[in-house]
Image (tube, rainbow, N blue to C red):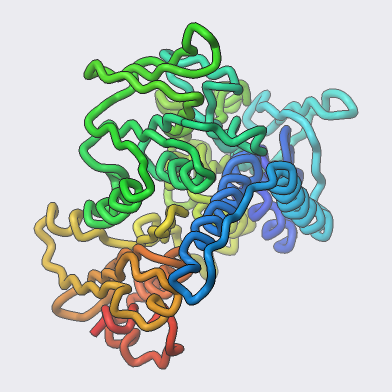
Length: 455
């Protein structure tokens, strides 16, 4: 008899675990209440990156005069952009459904909750159904965090999910939150011509990133005309008396007025109302489910992956977790299995210039007293960057001075999200800087800066 594997949530972790486990012989059921492919992925990540790409095209149009071309103005067609976002979302979700169907995975559109340690009750289109399982995966994702001092109306006071598809582009907007999501929204709205103010609770944006990296991004924001309120923490967002704008009040007395405001202060896991108590699954005060290196919860047959696990909230991480769960559920881990190493996960921020990093950070190494070798090459010395008329940013590689093994790196500049893959591979495979130097890379190409930095 095939192992009965039930998955709550069909996002990156859920559908990866489903397809892989099904190929390995499990009888898989996926329960999804919103959209197969994941709400956080298809309703947040994909629309925002699509709009950022459009904003990037506008910014590129502004640079073409330096490439021997005449001045060009790009006007945004809101209806066309909305249709483009919807088309991409639909195509990606359709691909997920097709993949699950091809592996004979049962898909149920509805809400599921545990009623015991081996049972789930599903409220589906055909009415309630209780499903028994041998193993289960919780991958129900997350949603934008809303503080108690703010009541978003979806019109003027927005969560990140209210921003797309775009109903209109604001004349002015205040972004609350200077982390990854916040700076991406600053880039996006400023590209579309809005007057943007960013409330920065610390003394620089991206508090968890390399200060040198953050500095390059801040310089670009200032050049764009973005106003940075550093050392300010928002404590209220309210509509003005006329209802045609918002007022953001900060704890230091500063006040920002704009036509719109958007909250970008993180997310919360979707773990309430899914019967964790009935199943006996433990969770912390924030609603996250602790897991071990196999993504196993406190119960040996119930797993958690994706945003609910409290690990890095990245689709790439969720996908890898899903794969590892499938291997563990079907026993493949006893033959050949590598645990997810969250310290070696590459991440990117889709601003302009793009930012990407992987592995050990320079500040982290110095704080721990670890000896490292840091080499840095600016893109201004790259022929390809000059050809692209975009010499902003740099490549930084961190390596072990004794062995030459690549420990980490940061890239700021055009196509950083693509270029970081080289360093991610080096970090994961314990390659040496000399392995990069001796690789015969394309010229002229931005990747040449990687070899130069590895020298």
